[in-house]
Image (cartoon, rainbow, N blue to C red; front, side, top):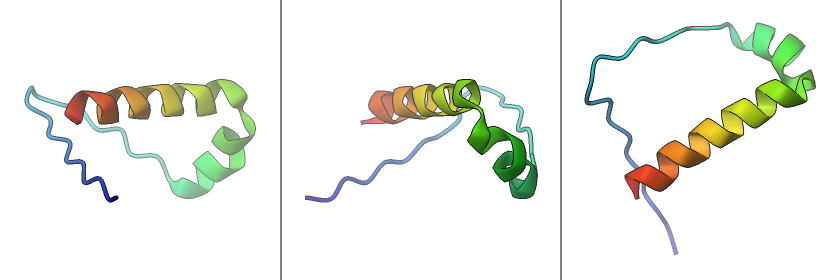
Amino acid sequence: MYTVSTVWAIPKSDILEIPLSKIQQYGFNDPIFLRFICTHLSKKLYAST
């Protein structure tokens, strides 16, 4: 079974752009950062389905 999710930003949103090389260098080795990203992405996906 396939699930398709679409996330729309209804209120005004700010976007922070970070080069992938910096995330790979610092973020992927930081368990606090990884937990933060996983928690927020899962909340957004759950709310949109």
